[in-house]
Amino acid sequence: MTTDDKSLGDLIAVVCTKDRPERVSDFVQNLIRACVPPRKIVLVDSTTNPSWTDRNRQSLGLLERHGWEPHYISDTPGLPHQRNTALKFIALNFPSTKYVSFLDDDVFIGGQYFEN
Image 1: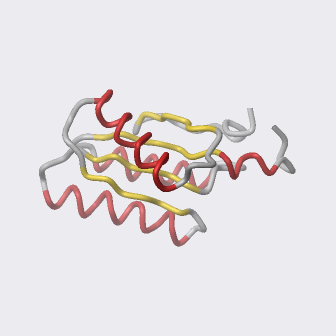
Image 2 (image 1 turned 180 degrees about the vertical axis):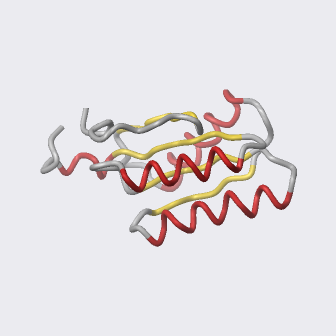
């Protein structure tokens, strides 16, 4: 894919997390700096701490202010379960999506990650 390739609109990033609002905040900051990101992201959060939930939602709000379309899902713990929940959400809400990128909340996205 190149920066002119519109197929990035067919890509949704999914991040599953539990009890790591600092990581989510760092991840969001990194995504904002990524060269050509997808513009949709689904955060599947398994925390039971309301203040951490609020912090994760605030991080998604920052993405929204930078032109992203963030979606928040509260779910039970377990990475396979969280990923399946995200896929069901995407299938119901964005059925024409061609690509889903599952990312860890502690990953660093390099400049052309989504282009490659």
